[in-house]
Amino acid sequence: MEHLISYKQAVTRIGWGMTAFFLVSQVVQGIFVAILGMVAPELIKSMTVQLLLSDFSIYCIGFPILVLICKNLETQKQPPVPRRKMTWRLFYKSLCIAFAVTYLASFVYTMVMEFLSSLTGFSLTQNAIEDIVSNISIPEQILLFCIIPPILEELVFRKYLYSKVGGYGHNAYILVSGLCFGLFHGNLNQFLYAFALGALFAWMHLTTGKVVYGMAMHAVVNLVGSVLAPLVMENDIAAGILGLLILVVIGYGLWTFRLAKRAGDFAPPSGQPQPYPLVRTTVLNGGMIAYILLFVLISILSIVSYAMMG
Image (cartoon, rainbow, N blue to C red):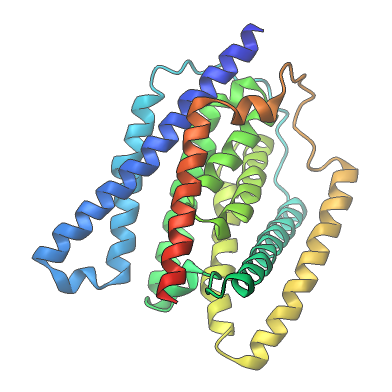
């Protein structure tokens, strides 16, 4: 029972920390944009400048707030993890699964939103990434999607969170990492695949003991989804071929996951007992509920504003 209370207290603190992390980042970014809009309005028109301001607000101001809130959160002794060498074969299988998760989640989201759009008469299908990509150059896309986020997000949502909840069990860490990562994206479109990718990257961190492999895979996924795919979509024939390839990737990735799971490749690194209902304990606490409600509110506002503009 003591372990249950201890873990629940930990995820409660992390939930409040993530809530403050998200809110402070957004508020500070808004302040920076307002100030820059007054002193240098020509700069604020640049999407690159806005994204750099966002990254600065998140990691230089928002993240220290999370660290401050979780400062006194006792770091549990990490359980032993049997490390595995990240072979090219394992990396390839993991990457196939990552792509399958990403495109399957995006497909489900699009279908649901198209259905709701037909019912309401409003255009609810939004893709913030496409809107951003169309306003920045390819070198800027690589910097802002394939270099900065993979490095900083893996350090925060994998390495840092492991130092706070890794000692409560590998399954607990994978769930908290995926959930916090998904919710932090602040929109329904990215939540589904970000949650799954976050869990996968957390597993890679546990398996290898290094975040660099998660960074590499994160970079590849962003490169394909945020840089290469929008270029291909400019040509109708290429877009059609890409659509077929996506279906193949989804099928192959799911099949690969099934085979890998049967072979034990994606099993938790150790057979730790779970002395408490993991999902319920992780989600049903004040901090995480506040974080989830904030995500829901931001997502609804985003959808409504996009529908109104459409």
